[in-house]
Length: 141
Image (cartoon, rainbow, N blue to C red; front, side):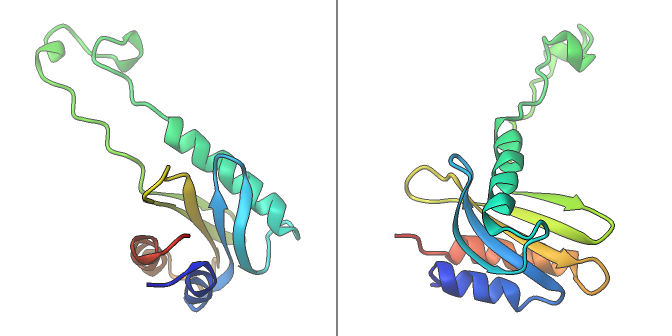
């Protein structure tokens, strides 16, 4: 089971990987980083990743009785599906793709992996699969 450094090195071995971070998304601090940063500073990238992760973690889908959901009285009879936790976020830019994968931990689960891929040489599907595997195997502590 990989630790932080091994995890980031494995993430950087993916095709098109330009940078990788392990971020505590409650504080915005980088627990580790490898490669380049899209803004030239790893701590700024970690803080921006944390903002995205916090927004996704706090997202709640509208409920059946919420006027914003557009549900009719007939729809209210059917139970609402349980909101599934967000597994990852994908942000695409003209220059690259960013995959932010949430990491389940024994303590507070406030950690995420962020991988920056070159858009022309990266493989987004492979990155999602491999980051999911890394997140499951990562050992913190």
